[in-house]
Image (cartoon, rainbow, N blue to C red; front, side, top):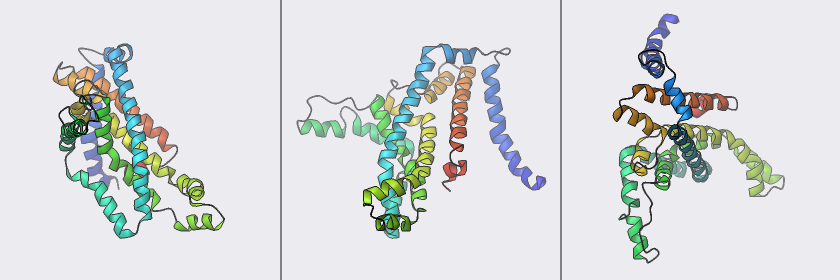
Length: 270
């Protein structure tokens, strides 16, 4: 069995363990052992503010995807098979277009001379263009659009496994539809909610292309700090330290969530 598993173990070692070890080594070695890069993350405002903003935007995006994705997943689970397939196809359809193209599309729509501002000004609803891009609003809006399918799919996977007989039983016992939903269906769907929230939150923590374009250099997230440390300042140690801290945050999140639901439900929506 060990020999059979050795090829896969070798791939994991080469493609995962070695890069992570190199990343950690880069963060603590610069002409000798040092914790200077980690000290800067703790003491310098730019790093603290960046991590705070990243977690803030990730939380907002996660909550918005829950609010928008739950009704879509519920509708798909309640509809007949043919219509549910159509809903899921529309949810998955954006995956056929690259993230970069979708981010540019939002940039075109939301910029000062974009379609939305022109329409609002043409209807005399505003006198000057609204600042919809190069700020947190544009970053959050585009990120919600891109990450929404990662919320809908785990939710739908959980909801379709909830027996319809439970809803009928609740109704037969005198519960109105809202009461039955809140007391029966919603609690049973919470595992899907938690799985989707974890997946979206973790993905948002490391999101790069969309915040880079929609933030316009004004909304700085952790992924952008890593990129600039490497590209602009050639500070591989600083970039590695930030990456290690972010990776540790992700591990902590997965560990805490694993106490509530199995990790395979998050990663595979089983």
